[in-house]
Image (cartoon, rainbow, N blue to C red; front, side, top):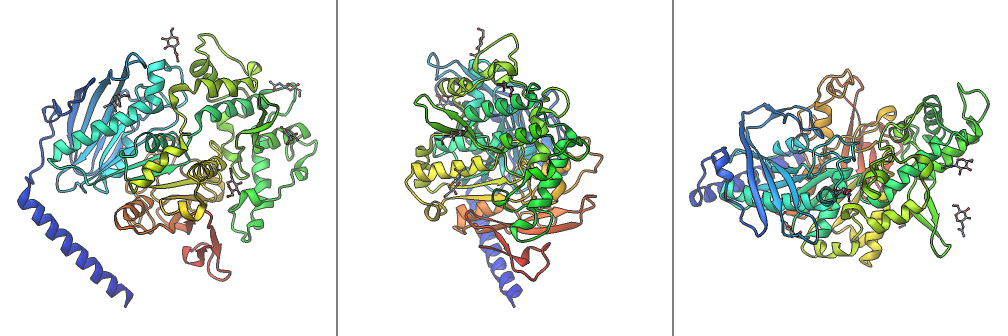
Length: 573
Ligand SMILES: *[C@@H]1O[C@H](CO)[C@@H](O)[C@H](O)[C@H]1NC(C)=O
Ligand SMILES: *[C@@H]1O[C@H](CO)[C@@H](O)[C@H](O)[C@H]1NC(C)=O
Ligand SMILES: *[C@@H]1O[C@H](CO)[C@@H](O)[C@H](O)[C@H]1NC(C)=O
Ligand SMILES: *[C@@H]1O[C@H](CO)[C@@H](O)[C@H](O)[C@H]1NC(C)=O
Ligand SMILES: *[C@@H]1O[C@H](CO)[C@@H](O)[C@H](O)[C@H]1NC(C)=O
């Protein structure tokens, strides 16, 4: 009965949609535009802005694409729909001499006219990477979006910060993304001889930061923004990384966590916390509610324990970073990691030898412009104050009050964060939500009208769930392309999925958060929950379990009788 009613609705929708298409067809030219460089020359005419076309290439249905030399996003992507791949280089002198000249590249994937859904999707970058995020853009093309992203003004791998000049910092901070939206909208409108109906954004991590920064900077850029695990608080995030890394490196204190200890810790956290959330399912659903007793794993046998000093390091990594301010008051600078994030900690401080990642590059290149090295012994809380004063590239997305313009023109935000994220603490997203609420003098129930936050138990940074195999795939930015890139990541696993959305539920708003955002923006259908999926570990395509992720402050609660691995046994409460 329900199914019949549903297909009747679907039928009506399809009919009215194709009638609208037909009407439009009579009025406007329908043939696919030409995918050649000259189609994009002299399209943008803005004061101080030059747009040089580098490339326009036709990609056939189920084709692949890669850009040689792209250090941030070197992987080849496959299964693309038929489209036109365009690269332009933008120079913008309008800020000069106040700020150095801006220069960045923009990539566009333009589906054929018949495949275009009349919308734009801008996609963010990752970490400190330079390079156009073609993999991220590829996901959006399957929905029919014309997708846009920028190289952020430089070309580098994600952990490389040595590119920083003043000009490039501003470009990475906000200018490249903003300009790409401006230029991208004009190129798209020209190419299809039609203005896009709606503009969306999707990004995770640095991509999340860029999206928040842009909604604060220009309320007109997007109608809906999908923001994952945002690295929004650059000026505090980076000193905090240095702080926990220097604690870890401090051999005087003898508290360094070796690979073995991290693994012992993660195992014990799961053992103690799993059932405390009410269901023993190998998922820690409320890490901040867990009463964790680390003394259970303190002993002198390094094969099964931590030393007291290592336990002390652990507590510091889990604690918020608090400094004494100028007036002697305690101030929280940055939120510590949550329990269940231990498996990713080694990304920031290595395990057995030296740092493996940023290695104090922030102090060296972004703050102090040093040609020589900067070592952990030089770190002190003073770095926090310098970071706040310098605010490199004006990258930090902390202009909360400006979001009222975005809200007033009807903009929507869906933010999400994995609770097992060991690169950016999920508490920092809650801090962003809280800060927005207090800046706009609103409340959690009211802000949910236009800004919702989803916590994803067991999900790591942006994607995957490792030891928990908690449902994590809900069509969020980067998830589908990561699955396609598994072989290139050296996992020994095969490429998986369709290159977009969630296998088995392509574009279905119940399972796919980007589709859910579109329905919220365009049809006013509020997003209460999205069903996330986990796959069996062999990635043979079998679903291991599903579970809804819920709009904060609600969380998924088991009905007490159904299969805990099936979404229908859970409700958002
Ligand atoms: C660092 O110094 C060099 C040389 O003076 C300059 O070109 C560059 O813009 C500076 N970087 C920053 C981040 O200010
Ligand atoms: C150029 O820079 C100005 C000033 O920052 C900015 O308002 C404008 O949007 C920029 N345009 C592009 C296309 O980068
Ligand atoms: C290293 O540990 C020692 C002993 O606890 C402490 O006195 C010192 O301040 C620490 N140094 C840093 C840079 O954290
Ligand atoms: C300030 O923070 C320190 C830890 O960093 C703590 O020991 C102390 O009790 C705090 N003081 C107040 C007044 O909260
Ligand atoms: C955010 O606010 C809630 C109360 O609304 C509070 O429980 C939570 O601790 C706050 N989190 C952060 C990180 O500020």
